[in-house]
Figure 1 (cartoon, rainbow, N blue to C red):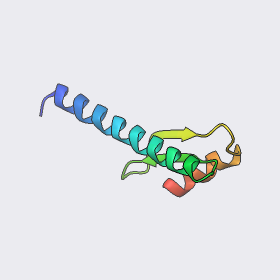
Figure 2: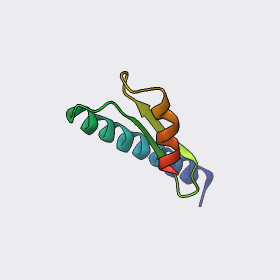
Figure 3: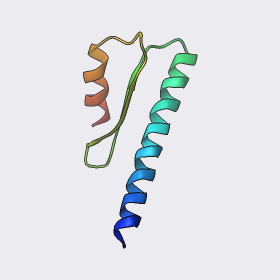
Length: 68
């Protein structure tokens, strides 16, 4: 596998994580929820994070802990 394929795969993975996070946030907002959403890889490393403006600051740590 070439270096370019590795970068492309990582980029696609990060893009997919951001897409998932935004879809979850959007669905939660449709339900009237204020959320923080974290997406991690299989090793528990953060790939994407989004937070609605109204979400409690404490929800950041909770989202990260739940994602792991």
